[in-house]
Length: 160
Image: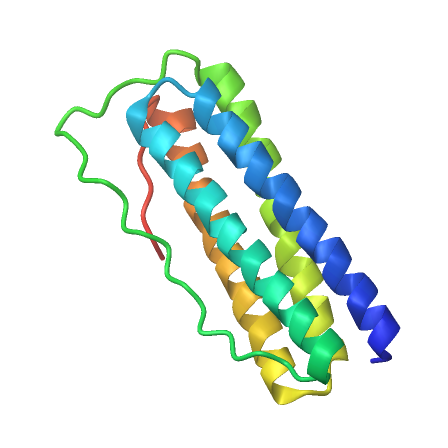
């Protein structure tokens, strides 16, 4: 992949990470349930982690044309739930927030998978595969939360 195209692609996925980070931080302020709020705070922090790693990659490629090692990151375990999970009073608007988040995660997953295919460097390929996998994990967590809220009215999710 030509360096200028890769640099352009990194700028695009960095911007996507920033949009997701800001979107999740805003969502956390709109969700009244502490479990839901914590989930979106963690998602925002995770997207900041991705943004920072992409910034480090961008710098390394500009300075030395070398890819960085990406160690990846695990999503935190969900909080321990009470026997009767708290109901979400704003279920309809929260479902919309989760739907938007699912779209962001799917777009990010696909973008990283596409970059992985195009990058001939093994470290770069591995990094983009891990990023795609992490975004897929976020998608699965959000899918669980969506299902739980839709079917029970309560926040619940698991880490795959």
